[in-house]
Image (cartoon, rainbow, N blue to C red; front, side, top):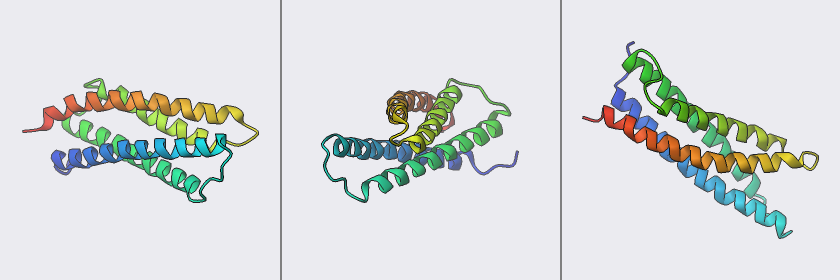
Length: 145
């Protein structure tokens, strides 16, 4: 395959991963703020919910960029997939992010299960991010000069 420099691809992946993890932290903070305003029955700032949705959309986009770079780079370098535990770890993250995004669209007063599912998926996402980050470090070491 005639692809751009793999180091260039890995730099984009590293930035996307860092930004995804930053978005996750911001989403956690804004999610806790949403939860506190709900449980304390205080007026929620009008910007908070749209901000949370926007950050979630950004994180979904970044994770999908990571998936595509990982697939393209690995196929370009090796000709096939599945050379490390990083692929299943990444697929777990992508699945959890997409399920979390879907569950967020189901949250309303007639679906009390959706909020619990959303929170549980995001707790699982914390551990999946740790797993994919650690497995990614070993993969990146193979490409550094």
